[in-house]
Image 1: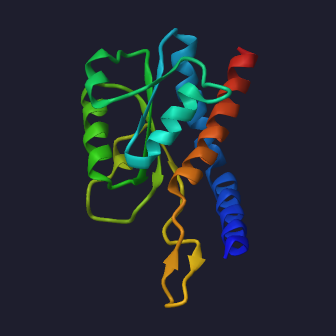
Image 2: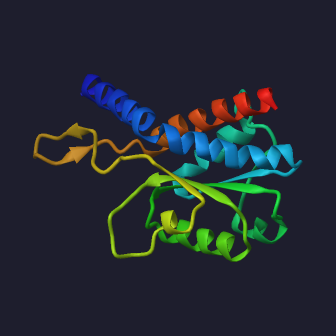
Length: 174
């Protein structure tokens, strides 16, 4: 089962790389604006996606000018700051509330989530740029015909590293 999971995970990473490269580059440019303006890049992770905020702030190679964000931080963010909002699905209620607050405050932000086709509101409608994690079903088929294995945080960390590397390149050229 692990071999199937690894193969499918590699396919997911390839899909994100191939289909979201333009969004990753646009997102990196937007987030790099905060660093150039001496602002912060706040990272907000809903549920297990806090792993992205932890990696950005406490990882072996932290993201330049990064700070983990909580709901209490919204009033201290200013116009030169940027936010990376990370959640499982684009219709997640917690993330949607945060996206509305950011939009109401005029804060530019990027989202990492699996985009869902829905009549419901979506964070992708409010974000400046949105990166699709494309994790719509489990990666491994189970014996009963269902699918298991939803590595949302792994997909988000992969996309995060794409952002980080691109931001670092932008800042090196600056």
